[in-house]
Length: 481
Image 1 (tube, rainbow, N blue to C red):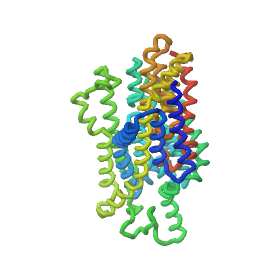
Image 2 (cartoon, rainbow, N blue to C red):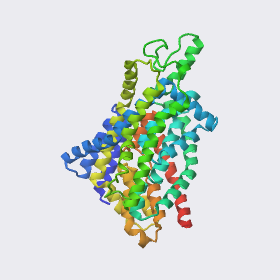
Image 3 (tube, rainbow, N blue to C red):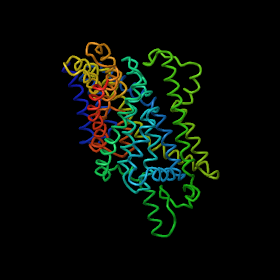
Image 4 (cartoon, helix red, strand yellow):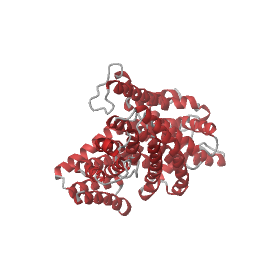
Protein backbone atom coordinates (compact mmCIF):
# COMPACT_ATOMS: atom_id res chain seq x y z
CA UNK A 1 0.00 0.00 0.00
CA UNK A 2 1.15 3.54 -0.78
CA UNK A 3 2.96 4.89 2.30
CA UNK A 4 1.52 8.34 1.62
CA UNK A 5 -2.05 7.05 2.00
CA UNK A 6 -1.18 5.28 5.26
CA UNK A 7 0.27 8.54 6.59
CA UNK A 8 -2.85 10.42 5.46
CA UNK A 9 -5.12 8.06 7.40
CA UNK A 10 -2.91 8.19 10.52
CA UNK A 11 -2.64 11.98 10.33
CA UNK A 12 -6.39 12.43 10.04
CA UNK A 13 -7.20 10.18 12.98
CA UNK A 14 -4.42 11.74 15.08
CA UNK A 15 -5.79 15.22 14.35
CA UNK A 16 -9.22 14.27 15.71
CA UNK A 17 -7.82 12.60 18.81
CA UNK A 18 -5.50 15.48 19.70
CA UNK A 19 -8.09 18.21 19.12
CA UNK A 20 -10.92 16.45 20.97
CA UNK A 21 -8.79 15.41 23.95
CA UNK A 22 -6.25 18.22 24.30
CA UNK A 23 -7.76 21.50 23.04
CA UNK A 24 -10.73 23.79 23.65
CA UNK A 25 -12.18 22.98 20.24
CA UNK A 26 -15.05 20.54 19.84
CA UNK A 27 -15.57 17.51 17.63
CA UNK A 28 -17.17 19.54 14.83
CA UNK A 29 -13.99 21.57 14.26
CA UNK A 30 -11.84 18.47 14.83
CA UNK A 31 -13.55 16.56 12.03
CA UNK A 32 -13.28 19.43 9.57
CA UNK A 33 -9.58 19.97 10.34
CA UNK A 34 -8.96 16.22 10.11
CA UNK A 35 -10.55 16.19 6.65
CA UNK A 36 -8.23 19.02 5.54
CA UNK A 37 -5.12 17.35 7.00
CA UNK A 38 -5.99 13.98 5.44
CA UNK A 39 -6.57 15.49 2.02
CA UNK A 40 -3.32 17.48 2.10
CA UNK A 41 -1.19 14.52 3.23
CA UNK A 42 -2.85 12.25 0.64
CA UNK A 43 -1.93 14.72 -2.08
CA UNK A 44 -5.40 15.90 -3.04
CA UNK A 45 -5.82 19.22 -4.81
CA UNK A 46 -6.58 21.91 -2.22
CA UNK A 47 -9.77 23.07 -3.88
CA UNK A 48 -11.02 19.50 -4.30
CA UNK A 49 -10.55 18.99 -0.54
CA UNK A 50 -12.90 21.88 0.14
CA UNK A 51 -15.36 20.49 -2.42
CA UNK A 52 -15.24 17.06 -0.74
CA UNK A 53 -15.87 18.64 2.67
CA UNK A 54 -18.93 20.58 1.53
CA UNK A 55 -20.27 17.71 -0.59
CA UNK A 56 -19.80 15.15 2.20
CA UNK A 57 -21.47 17.46 4.71
CA UNK A 58 -24.42 18.10 2.42
CA UNK A 59 -24.86 14.47 1.36
CA UNK A 60 -24.83 13.26 4.95
CA UNK A 61 -27.35 15.81 6.18
CA UNK A 62 -29.51 15.24 3.11
CA UNK A 63 -29.99 11.65 4.24
CA UNK A 64 -30.19 12.11 8.01
CA UNK A 65 -30.49 15.83 8.89
CA UNK A 66 -34.25 16.20 8.46
CA UNK A 67 -34.79 12.82 10.13
CA UNK A 68 -32.87 13.95 13.22
CA UNK A 69 -34.83 17.20 13.38
CA UNK A 70 -38.21 15.48 13.10
CA UNK A 71 -37.14 12.68 15.45
CA UNK A 72 -36.18 15.01 18.29
CA UNK A 73 -39.49 16.81 17.76
CA UNK A 74 -41.40 13.56 18.25
CA UNK A 75 -39.23 12.78 21.27
CA UNK A 76 -40.00 16.16 22.83
CA UNK A 77 -43.75 15.71 22.43
CA UNK A 78 -43.53 12.19 23.87
CA UNK A 79 -41.65 13.62 26.85
CA UNK A 80 -43.83 16.63 27.70
CA UNK A 81 -47.10 14.78 27.11
CA UNK A 82 -46.16 11.98 29.52
CA UNK A 83 -46.53 9.38 26.74
CA UNK A 84 -42.85 8.42 26.94
CA UNK A 85 -43.28 7.64 30.62
CA UNK A 86 -46.31 5.45 29.87
CA UNK A 87 -44.35 3.60 27.18
CA UNK A 88 -41.38 3.07 29.48
CA UNK A 89 -43.53 1.59 32.22
CA UNK A 90 -45.27 -0.70 29.72
CA UNK A 91 -41.92 -2.03 28.47
CA UNK A 92 -40.70 -2.55 32.01
CA UNK A 93 -43.79 -4.62 32.79
CA UNK A 94 -43.49 -6.63 29.56
CA UNK A 95 -39.83 -7.63 29.94
CA UNK A 96 -39.67 -7.71 33.72
CA UNK A 97 -37.47 -5.92 36.20
CA UNK A 98 -33.74 -6.18 35.50
CA UNK A 99 -34.18 -7.10 31.83
CA UNK A 100 -34.35 -3.56 30.44
CA UNK A 101 -31.10 -3.85 28.41
CA UNK A 102 -32.47 -7.02 26.79
CA UNK A 103 -35.62 -5.08 25.92
CA UNK A 104 -33.63 -2.27 24.31
CA UNK A 105 -31.30 -4.59 22.40
CA UNK A 106 -34.18 -6.70 21.11
CA UNK A 107 -36.29 -3.71 20.10
CA UNK A 108 -33.26 -2.14 18.39
CA UNK A 109 -32.45 -5.27 16.39
CA UNK A 110 -36.07 -5.64 15.22
CA UNK A 111 -36.48 -1.98 14.27
CA UNK A 112 -33.22 -1.82 12.32
CA UNK A 113 -34.02 -4.66 9.90
CA UNK A 114 -36.09 -2.34 7.69
CA UNK A 115 -34.93 1.05 9.04
CA UNK A 116 -31.52 2.73 8.82
CA UNK A 117 -29.70 2.82 12.17
CA UNK A 118 -29.61 6.62 12.28
CA UNK A 119 -33.36 7.00 11.76
CA UNK A 120 -34.28 4.10 14.04
CA UNK A 121 -32.07 5.33 16.87
CA UNK A 122 -33.49 8.84 16.74
CA UNK A 123 -37.02 7.40 16.82
CA UNK A 124 -36.40 4.92 19.67
CA UNK A 125 -33.98 6.88 21.88
CA UNK A 126 -36.80 8.66 23.77
CA UNK A 127 -37.94 5.23 24.96
CA UNK A 128 -34.50 4.48 26.42
CA UNK A 129 -34.51 7.87 28.14
CA UNK A 130 -37.95 7.28 29.59
CA UNK A 131 -37.03 3.88 31.00
CA UNK A 132 -33.87 5.36 32.54
CA UNK A 133 -35.95 8.18 34.03
CA UNK A 134 -38.38 5.70 35.57
CA UNK A 135 -35.47 3.60 36.93
CA UNK A 136 -33.58 6.78 37.94
CA UNK A 137 -30.39 5.41 36.36
CA UNK A 138 -28.79 3.13 33.76
CA UNK A 139 -29.27 5.35 30.71
CA UNK A 140 -25.86 4.63 29.15
CA UNK A 141 -26.43 0.87 29.37
CA UNK A 142 -29.83 1.16 27.71
CA UNK A 143 -28.65 3.57 25.01
CA UNK A 144 -25.67 1.38 24.04
CA UNK A 145 -27.78 -1.79 23.99
CA UNK A 146 -30.34 -0.07 21.76
CA UNK A 147 -27.71 1.32 19.38
CA UNK A 148 -25.71 -1.88 18.99
CA UNK A 149 -28.82 -4.04 18.72
CA UNK A 150 -29.59 -1.89 15.69
CA UNK A 151 -26.06 -2.32 14.37
CA UNK A 152 -26.39 -6.11 14.29
CA UNK A 153 -29.38 -6.36 11.99
CA UNK A 154 -28.52 -3.23 10.01
CA UNK A 155 -25.25 -4.86 9.00
CA UNK A 156 -26.31 -8.47 8.62
CA UNK A 157 -29.98 -8.86 7.70
CA UNK A 158 -31.46 -7.89 4.30
CA UNK A 159 -33.41 -5.94 3.15
CA UNK A 160 -31.09 -3.37 4.71
CA UNK A 161 -29.21 -1.90 1.70
CA UNK A 162 -25.66 -2.99 2.64
CA UNK A 163 -26.21 -6.75 3.02
CA UNK A 164 -28.76 -6.67 0.19
CA UNK A 165 -26.19 -5.17 -2.19
CA UNK A 166 -23.48 -7.61 -1.03
CA UNK A 167 -25.91 -10.49 -1.64
CA UNK A 168 -26.54 -9.33 -5.19
CA UNK A 169 -22.87 -8.70 -5.98
CA UNK A 170 -21.72 -12.08 -4.67
CA UNK A 171 -24.65 -14.06 -6.05
CA UNK A 172 -25.81 -15.52 -2.71
CA UNK A 173 -29.34 -16.69 -2.00
CA UNK A 174 -31.20 -13.85 -0.25
CA UNK A 175 -33.28 -16.20 1.90
CA UNK A 176 -30.14 -17.96 3.17
CA UNK A 177 -28.52 -14.59 3.95
CA UNK A 178 -31.59 -13.45 5.92
CA UNK A 179 -31.61 -16.70 7.91
CA UNK A 180 -27.86 -16.58 8.61
CA UNK A 181 -28.08 -12.90 9.57
CA UNK A 182 -30.87 -13.58 12.04
CA UNK A 183 -28.92 -16.48 13.59
CA UNK A 184 -25.83 -14.28 13.93
CA UNK A 185 -27.97 -11.56 15.53
CA UNK A 186 -29.49 -13.92 18.10
CA UNK A 187 -26.05 -15.28 19.05
CA UNK A 188 -24.39 -11.84 19.23
CA UNK A 189 -27.17 -10.05 21.13
CA UNK A 190 -25.96 -11.43 24.50
CA UNK A 191 -22.53 -9.92 23.71
CA UNK A 192 -24.23 -6.53 23.26
CA UNK A 193 -26.09 -6.80 26.55
CA UNK A 194 -23.09 -8.05 28.54
CA UNK A 195 -20.80 -5.30 27.24
CA UNK A 196 -23.44 -2.59 27.79
CA UNK A 197 -24.03 -3.78 31.36
CA UNK A 198 -20.29 -3.85 32.02
CA UNK A 199 -19.33 -0.46 30.58
CA UNK A 200 -22.58 1.43 31.27
CA UNK A 201 -22.14 1.93 35.05
CA UNK A 202 -18.53 3.03 34.47
CA UNK A 203 -19.62 5.76 32.04
CA UNK A 204 -22.83 6.88 33.78
CA UNK A 205 -20.97 9.30 36.12
CA UNK A 206 -19.30 11.07 33.18
CA UNK A 207 -22.46 11.70 31.17
CA UNK A 208 -22.59 15.02 29.33
CA UNK A 209 -24.23 17.53 31.71
CA UNK A 210 -26.93 18.56 29.24
CA UNK A 211 -27.93 14.98 28.43
CA UNK A 212 -27.91 14.08 32.12
CA UNK A 213 -30.29 16.98 32.75
CA UNK A 214 -32.53 16.02 29.83
CA UNK A 215 -32.76 12.39 30.94
CA UNK A 216 -32.99 12.72 34.71
CA UNK A 217 -34.23 16.26 35.46
CA UNK A 218 -37.87 15.25 35.45
CA UNK A 219 -37.28 12.50 38.01
CA UNK A 220 -35.26 14.87 40.19
CA UNK A 221 -37.95 17.52 39.91
CA UNK A 222 -40.69 15.07 40.87
CA UNK A 223 -38.68 13.88 43.87
CA UNK A 224 -38.06 17.45 45.00
CA UNK A 225 -41.71 18.42 44.65
CA UNK A 226 -42.83 15.33 46.51
CA UNK A 227 -40.53 15.96 49.47
CA UNK A 228 -41.55 19.62 49.62
CA UNK A 229 -45.24 18.84 49.29
CA UNK A 230 -45.60 21.92 47.13
CA UNK A 231 -45.84 22.86 43.50
CA UNK A 232 -45.18 20.12 40.97
CA UNK A 233 -42.18 20.94 38.77
CA UNK A 234 -41.82 20.13 35.11
CA UNK A 235 -38.71 18.85 33.37
CA UNK A 236 -37.96 22.40 32.24
CA UNK A 237 -37.97 23.66 35.81
CA UNK A 238 -41.26 25.58 35.71
CA UNK A 239 -44.30 24.91 37.87
CA UNK A 240 -47.22 22.86 36.69
CA UNK A 241 -49.59 25.80 36.76
CA UNK A 242 -47.45 28.06 34.58
CA UNK A 243 -48.07 28.81 30.92
CA UNK A 244 -45.14 26.65 29.80
CA UNK A 245 -46.07 23.55 31.74
CA UNK A 246 -46.53 20.07 30.32
CA UNK A 247 -49.97 18.46 30.40
CA UNK A 248 -51.29 17.25 33.73
CA UNK A 249 -49.71 13.86 34.53
CA UNK A 250 -53.13 12.51 35.53
CA UNK A 251 -54.25 13.02 31.93
CA UNK A 252 -51.17 11.64 30.19
CA UNK A 253 -51.78 9.30 27.23
CA UNK A 254 -51.58 5.55 27.64
CA UNK A 255 -48.91 3.33 26.14
CA UNK A 256 -50.97 2.54 23.02
CA UNK A 257 -51.41 6.17 22.02
CA UNK A 258 -47.80 6.88 22.96
CA UNK A 259 -46.66 4.10 20.62
CA UNK A 260 -48.56 5.43 17.59
CA UNK A 261 -46.10 8.22 16.62
CA UNK A 262 -43.30 5.64 16.77
CA UNK A 263 -44.91 2.58 15.21
CA UNK A 264 -46.69 4.32 12.30
CA UNK A 265 -43.46 5.78 10.82
CA UNK A 266 -41.68 2.48 11.40
CA UNK A 267 -44.43 0.50 9.63
CA UNK A 268 -44.38 2.91 6.70
CA UNK A 269 -40.60 2.58 6.40
CA UNK A 270 -40.91 -1.22 6.66
CA UNK A 271 -43.51 -1.24 3.87
CA UNK A 272 -41.18 0.83 1.70
CA UNK A 273 -38.16 -1.37 2.37
CA UNK A 274 -39.93 -4.69 1.88
CA UNK A 275 -41.78 -3.64 -1.27
CA UNK A 276 -38.58 -2.21 -2.76
CA UNK A 277 -36.66 -5.42 -1.97
CA UNK A 278 -39.40 -7.55 -3.57
CA UNK A 279 -39.44 -5.29 -6.63
CA UNK A 280 -35.62 -5.34 -6.94
CA UNK A 281 -35.59 -9.12 -6.69
CA UNK A 282 -38.30 -9.41 -9.34
CA UNK A 283 -36.27 -7.16 -11.65
CA UNK A 284 -33.00 -8.94 -10.88
CA UNK A 285 -31.46 -5.72 -9.56
CA UNK A 286 -30.59 -6.56 -5.95
CA UNK A 287 -27.43 -4.46 -6.12
CA UNK A 288 -29.66 -1.54 -7.10
CA UNK A 289 -27.40 0.01 -9.75
CA UNK A 290 -30.01 0.16 -12.54
CA UNK A 291 -33.16 -0.17 -10.43
CA UNK A 292 -36.29 1.78 -11.38
CA UNK A 293 -39.28 1.42 -8.98
CA UNK A 294 -42.39 -0.17 -10.45
CA UNK A 295 -45.67 1.77 -10.40
CA UNK A 296 -47.07 -0.15 -7.43
CA UNK A 297 -43.97 0.58 -5.34
CA UNK A 298 -43.92 4.35 -5.86
CA UNK A 299 -46.68 5.29 -3.32
CA UNK A 300 -45.11 3.07 -0.65
CA UNK A 301 -41.67 4.49 -1.44
CA UNK A 302 -43.06 8.01 -0.94
CA UNK A 303 -44.91 7.34 2.31
CA UNK A 304 -42.09 5.11 3.58
CA UNK A 305 -39.35 7.63 2.97
CA UNK A 306 -38.02 8.41 6.49
CA UNK A 307 -38.66 12.13 6.00
CA UNK A 308 -42.32 11.70 5.03
CA UNK A 309 -42.87 8.93 7.58
CA UNK A 310 -41.52 11.07 10.43
CA UNK A 311 -43.55 14.09 9.35
CA UNK A 312 -46.61 11.86 9.73
CA UNK A 313 -45.29 10.68 13.09
CA UNK A 314 -44.80 14.24 14.34
CA UNK A 315 -48.31 15.27 13.28
CA UNK A 316 -49.70 12.20 15.07
CA UNK A 317 -47.71 13.07 18.20
CA UNK A 318 -48.98 16.64 18.34
CA UNK A 319 -52.63 15.80 17.64
CA UNK A 320 -53.02 12.54 19.59
CA UNK A 321 -50.79 13.04 22.64
CA UNK A 322 -51.37 16.66 23.64
CA UNK A 323 -54.64 17.93 25.11
CA UNK A 324 -56.75 19.92 22.65
CA UNK A 325 -56.51 22.97 24.92
CA UNK A 326 -52.70 23.09 24.68
CA UNK A 327 -51.84 26.57 23.28
CA UNK A 328 -50.27 26.74 19.84
CA UNK A 329 -47.33 28.85 21.05
CA UNK A 330 -46.59 26.27 23.76
CA UNK A 331 -46.41 23.43 21.22
CA UNK A 332 -44.17 25.54 18.99
CA UNK A 333 -41.95 26.32 21.99
CA UNK A 334 -41.52 22.62 22.77
CA UNK A 335 -40.68 21.84 19.14
CA UNK A 336 -38.17 24.71 19.11
CA UNK A 337 -36.53 23.28 22.23
CA UNK A 338 -36.22 19.92 20.49
CA UNK A 339 -34.73 21.52 17.38
CA UNK A 340 -32.21 23.44 19.46
CA UNK A 341 -31.01 20.25 21.14
CA UNK A 342 -30.39 18.71 17.70
CA UNK A 343 -28.21 21.57 16.41
CA UNK A 344 -24.77 20.34 17.48
CA UNK A 345 -25.67 16.76 16.61
CA UNK A 346 -26.46 17.85 13.06
CA UNK A 347 -23.19 19.78 12.70
CA UNK A 348 -21.04 16.93 13.99
CA UNK A 349 -22.88 14.30 11.93
CA UNK A 350 -22.39 16.38 8.79
CA UNK A 351 -18.71 16.92 9.57
CA UNK A 352 -18.30 13.16 9.98
CA UNK A 353 -19.68 12.80 6.46
CA UNK A 354 -17.12 15.36 5.25
CA UNK A 355 -14.24 13.41 6.76
CA UNK A 356 -15.55 10.13 5.33
CA UNK A 357 -15.82 11.54 1.80
CA UNK A 358 -12.29 12.97 1.90
CA UNK A 359 -11.02 9.54 2.96
CA UNK A 360 -12.91 7.89 0.11
CA UNK A 361 -11.83 10.35 -2.57
CA UNK A 362 -8.21 10.28 -1.38
CA UNK A 363 -8.11 6.56 -2.27
CA UNK A 364 -7.31 5.30 1.24
CA UNK A 365 -10.21 2.81 1.31
CA UNK A 366 -9.49 1.33 -2.13
CA UNK A 367 -5.77 1.02 -1.37
CA UNK A 368 -6.48 -0.86 1.86
CA UNK A 369 -8.84 -3.25 0.07
CA UNK A 370 -6.32 -4.04 -2.68
CA UNK A 371 -3.51 -4.56 -0.18
CA UNK A 372 -5.38 -7.07 1.96
CA UNK A 373 -6.69 -8.97 -1.09
CA UNK A 374 -3.10 -9.57 -2.22
CA UNK A 375 -2.11 -11.30 1.06
CA UNK A 376 -2.33 -15.10 1.42
CA UNK A 377 -5.06 -15.73 4.04
CA UNK A 378 -7.82 -18.27 4.84
CA UNK A 379 -10.51 -17.64 2.24
CA UNK A 380 -13.22 -16.23 4.53
CA UNK A 381 -10.79 -13.73 6.10
CA UNK A 382 -10.28 -11.95 2.78
CA UNK A 383 -13.74 -10.30 2.60
CA UNK A 384 -13.83 -9.97 6.41
CA UNK A 385 -10.58 -8.00 6.61
CA UNK A 386 -11.27 -5.95 3.49
CA UNK A 387 -14.60 -4.84 4.97
CA UNK A 388 -12.94 -4.14 8.33
CA UNK A 389 -10.14 -2.03 6.88
CA UNK A 390 -12.41 -0.10 4.53
CA UNK A 391 -14.76 0.59 7.45
CA UNK A 392 -11.85 1.91 9.52
CA UNK A 393 -10.66 4.01 6.61
CA UNK A 394 -13.87 5.76 5.63
CA UNK A 395 -16.55 5.09 8.26
CA UNK A 396 -19.53 3.81 6.28
CA UNK A 397 -20.50 0.21 6.97
CA UNK A 398 -22.56 0.08 3.78
CA UNK A 399 -19.64 1.28 1.66
CA UNK A 400 -17.35 -1.21 3.43
CA UNK A 401 -19.71 -4.12 2.64
CA UNK A 402 -20.12 -3.15 -0.99
CA UNK A 403 -16.37 -2.55 -1.46
CA UNK A 404 -15.49 -5.88 0.14
CA UNK A 405 -18.10 -7.70 -1.95
CA UNK A 406 -16.88 -6.04 -5.16
CA UNK A 407 -13.23 -6.93 -4.48
CA UNK A 408 -14.12 -10.48 -3.37
CA UNK A 409 -16.52 -11.34 -6.20
CA UNK A 410 -13.83 -12.37 -8.74
CA UNK A 411 -12.02 -14.32 -5.99
CA UNK A 412 -14.99 -16.53 -5.00
CA UNK A 413 -14.18 -19.38 -7.40
CA UNK A 414 -10.35 -19.32 -7.03
CA UNK A 415 -10.63 -19.26 -3.24
CA UNK A 416 -13.36 -21.94 -3.13
CA UNK A 417 -15.46 -19.64 -0.93
CA UNK A 418 -19.22 -20.17 -0.59
CA UNK A 419 -21.15 -16.99 -1.56
CA UNK A 420 -23.18 -17.13 1.67
CA UNK A 421 -20.01 -17.19 3.79
CA UNK A 422 -18.54 -14.38 1.70
CA UNK A 423 -21.61 -12.19 2.24
CA UNK A 424 -21.64 -12.79 6.00
CA UNK A 425 -17.89 -12.09 6.16
CA UNK A 426 -18.43 -8.76 4.41
CA UNK A 427 -21.28 -7.78 6.72
CA UNK A 428 -19.58 -8.91 9.95
CA UNK A 429 -16.28 -7.27 9.07
CA UNK A 430 -17.99 -3.94 8.46
CA UNK A 431 -19.06 -3.63 12.12
CA UNK A 432 -15.56 -3.01 13.48
CA UNK A 433 -14.68 -0.05 15.73
CA UNK A 434 -17.25 2.59 14.80
CA UNK A 435 -15.50 5.89 15.51
CA UNK A 436 -15.04 9.50 14.37
CA UNK A 437 -15.58 9.03 10.63
CA UNK A 438 -18.89 7.16 11.08
CA UNK A 439 -21.98 9.38 11.17
CA UNK A 440 -23.80 6.80 13.35
CA UNK A 441 -21.01 7.13 15.94
CA UNK A 442 -21.94 10.79 16.39
CA UNK A 443 -25.67 10.13 16.46
CA UNK A 444 -25.33 7.50 19.20
CA UNK A 445 -22.68 9.23 21.31
CA UNK A 446 -24.32 12.67 21.19
CA UNK A 447 -27.76 11.34 22.06
CA UNK A 448 -26.17 9.15 24.74
CA UNK A 449 -24.12 12.04 26.16
CA UNK A 450 -20.65 10.50 25.80
CA UNK A 451 -17.68 12.66 24.81
CA UNK A 452 -14.02 12.05 23.90
CA UNK A 453 -12.41 8.88 25.20
CA UNK A 454 -15.63 7.85 26.96
CA UNK A 455 -17.40 7.71 23.60
CA UNK A 456 -14.67 5.38 22.32
CA UNK A 457 -14.88 3.16 25.42
CA UNK A 458 -18.65 2.92 25.09
CA UNK A 459 -19.60 2.89 21.44
CA UNK A 460 -16.36 1.96 19.63
CA UNK A 461 -15.82 -0.74 22.24
CA UNK A 462 -19.23 -2.38 21.92
CA UNK A 463 -19.09 -2.47 18.10
CA UNK A 464 -15.62 -4.01 18.25
CA UNK A 465 -16.83 -6.62 20.74
CA UNK A 466 -19.52 -7.89 18.34
CA UNK A 467 -17.02 -7.74 15.45
CA UNK A 468 -14.57 -10.01 17.32
CA UNK A 469 -17.29 -12.41 18.41
CA UNK A 470 -18.62 -12.70 14.86
CA UNK A 471 -15.37 -14.29 13.65
CA UNK A 472 -15.90 -17.71 15.31
CA UNK A 473 -19.45 -17.72 13.90
CA UNK A 474 -18.03 -17.25 10.41
CA UNK A 475 -15.74 -20.28 10.81
CA UNK A 476 -18.68 -22.36 12.06
CA UNK A 477 -20.81 -21.22 9.12
CA UNK A 478 -18.01 -22.09 6.73
CA UNK A 479 -17.85 -25.62 8.19
CA UNK A 480 -21.64 -26.03 7.98
CA UNK A 481 -22.05 -24.96 4.35
